[in-house]
Length: 117
Length: 268
Length: 154
Image (cartoon, rainbow over all chains, first blue to last red; front, side, top):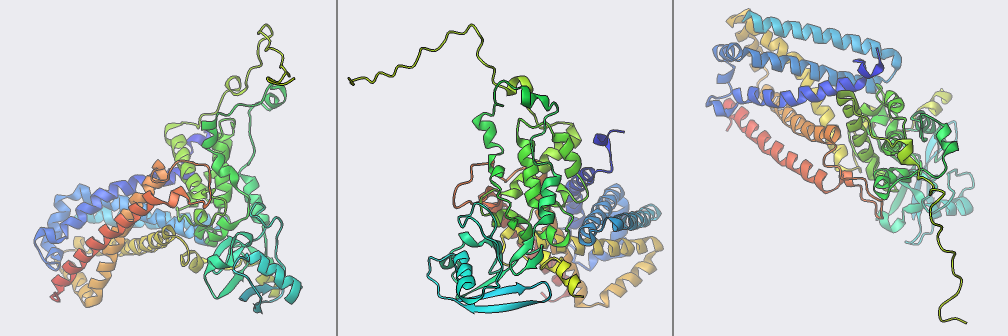
């Protein structure tokens, strides 16, 4: 496989970061608007069980998109911070593995939540 | 003028104060020379040209990396001067730092012209052609004097010594932008690494401290754009084909120019 | 011991990389971007756990809410900081995408002339940063009023 198509290159990582960031700008704005003063409720009222459940079930796909975008973008960013900070080639595999495991766990938890409600 | 210098003799580090006579027109390098002549012969620092073109006298002056020969005391506007060796380098003695890693990083991005057919250079009947417009796309990054100030200012180099650094990346872009160069793919494989171009997060401090206006931050952002274009669209930075590159000699049957007339009008 | 000290790079490290004092405005934005990013990922991990309690039924949700409100005003202050982090990280991230992926706001390569003002840090970049600061501060104050209004202070 020519290295041009290699998905292990760092640039694919950054392309993913940029793409997810652009998605999140819209989706996260939408999420914040649902808990904003524009809803006409006080902050304690937007955290009630019925309101949150209604939002999550009604906009299930949007929140699923947000979950995947935020977890992948965020943990990838954390990985970048860690490989810069620890900067030993030997540690990179360990950092990558920890990040992938954490990512899988959070995505599984979030997906289960979105399906179970 | 009170001067505070961070000393290091290979064993221990300490701060030493000097009281030096100074005129407002003196540069920091003049002050250092005066200290070595009159006060302390053991002070070590690098210097060569004293006019900002060799890049030897880089040091941290009042917390900001700068060339000592280009910083006047009147510009600093402070009562005392604090001098330190460049940040993020290993110190050899006093203000002299170890530039080995820096030079190795520069070498690792292949800062020379790569042609796929090296014979071209030897068989070329005339020189390789670069138009003034093409020249302007890379000549700014060619002004680098390798003083190493940008690596002292870079926040990523501060935590990641494996990061190639602004200087090497700017030089890589200088050769990628050059239409005569064909080493684009070769260099991209080196730059697109986990400690390569993507560890730059555009803090811009390299451009801020650069004494020659090279603007490494700009070069690195353009380099990122080229890498993305290559990965997503498989577009390479256009390099010139040998036929376009070399100015053709005039054909044999071309009319010869008239011989030069040495006669001066109005003369004898 | 003495040998090790010699091998260490002078004044490098995490704190030094996050310390923009004496440097340019862009380096301040770098520091803030990194700190807000770490705040947001730590919050996200907690947030996924928090929302998971929704799937366990209303009682579990009430217990989680009660646990959070036991923090008192610190809950609201924490959320306010997280809201500010999200606003800043998003706005500054958009500027960085324009810079890095599209090569905008940088200026063309020029012949360097004294006093060597770098075009990548000049007018366009400054305008972008100040716009971000104004928008983020305005929205952040709005979010603060809303959060504290719910608390009954304002």
